[in-house]
Amino acid sequence: MNLVVRVWRSGWAQAAVAVVAFVLAATALWWRGPDWGSVLDAFGLVIWSWIILALALNVVSTLFRALSWRLTVGQALPPEHQPRLVHVLSSFGVGLLANAIVPGRLGELARVATLRRHLPDAPAGTSATLVGTVFAHRLFDLVPASILVVWVLLTAEVPHWAVVSIMIAAAVGFALFTVAWLGAKRHDRTVVREGVGSLRQLLSMGRQGLSVLKAPVPLAGAIFLQCLGWLMQLLAVFVAMQAFGIDAPLPAAGLVLVLMNIATIVPLWPGNVGLVQAAVAFPLRNYGVAYPVGFAYGIVLQAIEIVCGVGLGLLAIAREGISVAMLRRMEDDEASSENAVEEVHELMGELDGSAHDTEAAREGAAVSR
Image 1 (cartoon, rainbow, N blue to C red):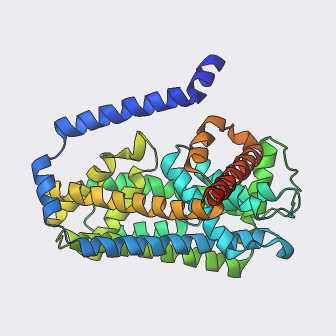
Image 2 (cartoon, rainbow, N blue to C red):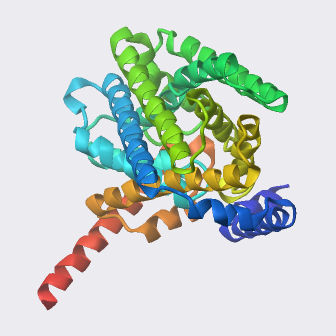
């Protein structure tokens, strides 16, 4: 069993499995997918100015989400160790890029490690607390997601096969939020020491990061910003519909957004390409949208999200002086979830080393000129 785990943790093994899964998915799409000629024809009718507007709305959505995390971090850390807003935005961007190019949860740890570098005088336990804020921040998505699900079920033409998936996802999300809320209500605030792994440490760091759940005003602000982020994303989905000439109401865009998120919960292959597009195209047939057109629309929606994440991430790593190659090396250094704090420290060392190398390269270029 240990041998199997070691083999699976190998970057080469994971890459091989990902490639095989992607090839199988691509083969299935080509063989049993839509009429690709009609898909290409749908792209020929796109009004690209609407796509640019949809991309801008996705950028605004990301900004709102980053501000929500800023409120969460601000509530978890003492006043004298509050990070600057620009550092939070930059760290959030690094996490977006890491999630886009590295599989797994390393994007979340990368943003924690990046932000921790800007808090050198913070007390012991800060890394653990920041990891907890990431968990809390992700939980806040459950509020706008639940509102969206209820609205879609009441107003949209939801296929019968999608109702079960939506209800299961909503039930799991509600259970997670309930557990987190009860954990945050505990009064004991065990001080977490840096470098101490175990399940108890993870629970302690989670309670520290969930401090915002006990502060009504910051909690309302963080959730409100997350709701604004989801609203911008909903508008982006609706605007992209106009680019393809899809005459469907706003609830149809809400249905697309819900099913897209459900389709990406479990990464079966890189990006779940094909599955996402099918999740978009099938329900749109109830609104008179041809399957190839819906499939092309799904391709553009996923491309918009990727371009937004990668573009903002590249700007962030340029500001931080981090190399893309360093983010790729994170996958080889990934540790178990019980050692999340130690992994953050390792990533901080990698980030610092990459930043120093980048600065040295710039100085060398300046001297040569």
